[in-house]
Image (cartoon, rainbow, N blue to C red):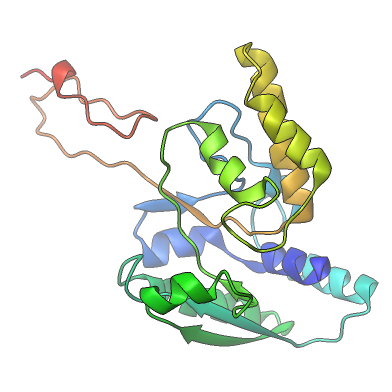
Length: 229
C-alpha cells in the first residue's frame, strides 16, 4: 500500500546510514537523480519526514488515515555478496529504525546474488535492496530503466503520465527545458514512491598537499590531464 511505503520514507534516517554504516563514503539521497547531474532535486525532503529527517508522527498519521493497524510486518530482502559487506549493517540499521517507531515488524532475510537477481523479478520479495551504477552519466539513466513502463525493475510500476514525460525528456534539446521535465518526473515518481531512494555514492580522491588540479565530476572519470605538482 502507498501509505506503507510513505511511512517507510518518513521513518528512514539516511544521515545515520551514511555516517554510521558508510562513514560518509555514501551520502543521503532525497530523489531519484543523484546530486551533480542536471535536473537533480531533493523532492523527498518536502514530501516525507521533516526536511529529510525521520518523523514518526507523520508516519503514524498516514497509518491512521489509511486505516492501517500497526505493527505492519514488512518482509525485507537484502543481498550479502553483490553490494559489499556493509549491506548487512545497512539493512540491520534500517530494520531498527522502522521498528523503533512501533509501526513495523521487519522480517529481514538475505539471499545470494545468483538466486536474488532472479527472484527479485518474480514477485518473491515484497521489498528488497537494489543498487545502481549508471551506464552513462545522465539523468535519463536513473529514470528510464526504473520508471518507464516495462522497465527492468519488474515491480509493476506503471504511470502513463510519467511515461510521456520520460519520453519527452529524451528528445528535448534545450537544456533548460529538459531540466524542467526531469524535475517533473522526479516529483511524479516521488509521489508514487514505487522505490525509496536511500543513498548515493560519494567520489573521494586523496592527494598530497603539493598536488594540484585533482578534479572529480559527474563523468565518473578521474582526470589525470589536469594534475600537476
